[in-house]
Length: 91
Length: 194
Image 1: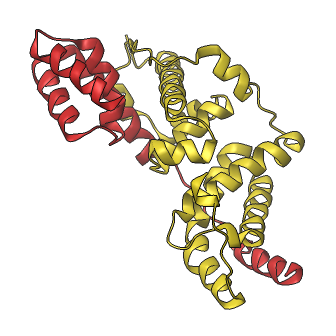
Image 2: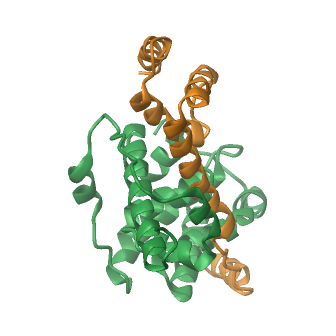
């Protein structure tokens, strides 16, 4: 599947533009799942295509929002102790 | 699947070491995941405790040096579905099958149109993000937590959730679009956009 995708990317990106394919790659790029070649093609496209560039920025900003603004809850103090004693009593 | 082929025989000391060094460091992630699934501190505690007890009980099927965090998350997710959802105060509105039947296809739908702006997103605060995320059905919430908050790869997510990678991608894509809709609605209600 990966090689097919690449072939098809090479074709589409060597031509004019293909925003649809760019958008399909977007999440792979954002999630660090794209190959170096896919990344190169993707960035080449968004360098020249403002709508895709903006979509990418928006998606990335939402991901960043989740990572930076969501408060993490503190683990209750007694939880580890409880787990340990439960293990001891059942072992 | 393949990693289940060999069972280990750990001594009690080894077991304790693995538990302390490989399992316990993930307790904060586990607790936060559990809380985002159950929305209840006591339920989250129970779920994490249950997960660690199971992990200890089945420690011989864990191979040292492999991905302990993914293994623990998988146990937690299964405990949540099998034992917990039934008695949870927050029953899920959508179930996996329903969700998959709704949009399962090989091709990821590429429509991402929205008038949400980057600047709007950047100004949002934790509570707004949190309620948008919490408003998603549990299956969608889960993939966003695993990917964006916990940084699991698609392959790890596929193992944790017992679904093919293609389904991970389509579910994640759909989840993100739904989240965006919630954020968009929120921005509108606050008069951020237009």
